[in-house]
Length: 234
Image (cartoon, rainbow, N blue to C red; front, side, top):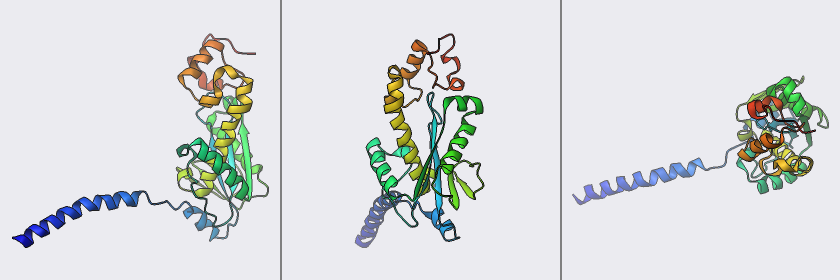
């Protein structure tokens, strides 16, 4: 009976310990170079990651970045920019700019967004980012899009969480746009709180549009009934 009791207790103990092992396995670092290695080994030396930010904003440009990192470089902490704190993004921005072989940034403004639609404008910003690179990359890894350039490419769903190159581009694009919001754009239109909400549709932002009207940098196609009979600045 004692042996049976001991066996039962050990089985129960294992059942308690096992979930902890599984939980620990879930937090192991993810390999963000799986896609890069596949194409490096296929002969594509310079691989550019492409991503954009600002797709859902009411105000300002959609901003894209293209980043070529050295082969086999591992950047600790690089991940989807939305999952990082502002302080961490700023620190990684400096590291990426220092380590990258090339960085290109592309923009599509509010007028272009209204003319084309946001999807096509985002693709245009991505194209401009690739064209802004010093040199032509051999291959593109793109976050859930296709770039209109004559370069082999792969569209990766949730690419900024699965590819270091795309994650680096996500950080460069995000920091670039946030700094425009906090500096240039907030200086132009201080009443709208752009340094705080970065152009997204917060309650305060919507209220200011209703009270003051839309600026020339607001996306008319995004505002819908918000502007209604309201006036337009300038």
